[in-house]
Structure formats: C-alpha cells, structure tokens
Amino acid sequence: VQLQESGPGLAKPSETLSLTCTVAGGTISGGGHYWTWIRQQPEKGLEWIGYIYYTGSTYYNSALKSRVTMSLGASDNEFSLRLTSVTAADTAVYYCARVSTVQVGLEVIRHFDYWGQGTMVTVSS
Amino acid sequence: IQLTQSPSSLSASIGDRVTITCRASQTIRVHLNWYQQKLGKAPKLLISGTSNLQPGVPSRFSGSGSGTQFTLTISSLEPEDFATYFCHQTYNTPPEDTFGQGTRLEIK
Image (cartoon, rainbow over all chains, first blue to last red):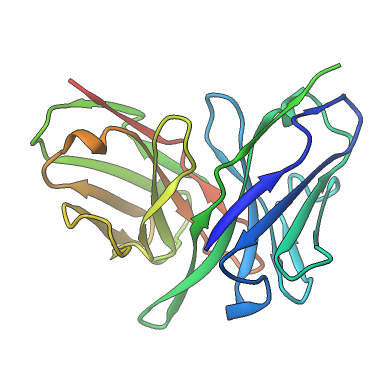
C-alpha cells in the first residue's frame, strides 16, 4: 500500500485548504480500515486531525472540529481533507495514513501503519 | 490525554543502550504506539500496542509498559537509528488521538 497527498502548497489566510490522499495498491473500502490525516507544524510535533471510514463516517480532533471536513473521493482510492478559515498556525506538513488495529489481550489498538510522504502547506498572504 | 516524552533530546554513541519514556496524563492501558521519523521523511511505525514489533523492524527495538508509563528501548544503537521518536496514544472512543512531543536521538 502506498499513499500520496496532493493539493496546493500555498493558501491565503481565511481561505479553505483542500488536500487529497490517493491510495495505491489497495482501496479505501478494502480491508475495513479507517484512514486518517495528521499534520506537523514546522519544527514541532505531530497533531492528529481526524479519521474517515470507508462508509464515510468521521471523527475529528475536537480542537479542529469546527473547521475540518473529511470526505471520500469519487473513486475508491481517494479521500480528502478540507480545512476552513486557515491562519498561519495551519502552516504544516500534512500527512495521510492508513489505520490498522492489533489485538493485545482483550484490547484492540489502533495505529498508523502506512503513511504518505507528506505535503507542505504554507498559509501566507 | 497528554503524552510527555523524556528526554526531549538525547546524545548517544553507536552500541549504546537507549531508553525513551512516554508518560500519559491518565491511563491508556496498552493503547500506545511508537514511530521513528528521519529528517524530511514521514514517520515510520515501529511498535504498536505497546510491545508489538512491526514486520521488518530490527529486534534491537522493544517496547514495554502499561497504564500511564511506557518505554521504547534500543538495545544497541546502529547509525541508522539516529532520528526523532514519537509515542502516540489511541485509547479514546470516540477517538481523540495525541502524540508525544518527540525525542531527538543524536550521535555523541
């Protein structure tokens, strides 16, 4: 499985950022996986943005929930991220990833096993 | 849930044994993963569910812990291990995942 992010590398403040993740070697609906977006601001740590399931159901980071929409693409190998009203604080490398699970005893643990290479988005006028 | 890694940075030599700690602000049982990130690259999953080594990851990497305290250990450092390491919790349902701030491992 390979993932590839795409979209504009530059957004103006207050505009909407739109990115697409294309999956190769698999499909969104195959295997019952969730799919996810994560971002990394310059010289900083990782921030989880949200999950989307092949049915279209979503979960978002509560800190970003009012501005984030994740959706499935027209084909079964794409999903997308929209982030509205962007500011300089949204400047980051954006990654998409596949979510898998592992069972440890009675616990089922989510983890991100395949990642895209990331795409840098700069918010600037 | 906040994850705090220590140390934030670490200098070590080839062959050293290194331990990185990740503390959670509340119990996450065993819902803890570890990633390695090299400069300019995406994070790579090393360990899932506290101690499950991913296929292809060298056996010098190991993870342990439960509840609120977890460790990633590299038993004998190799040159390719110098990178930044992140812990990641996926405990909550509905999800509210968080990452540790990272530990930068540098060559002494």
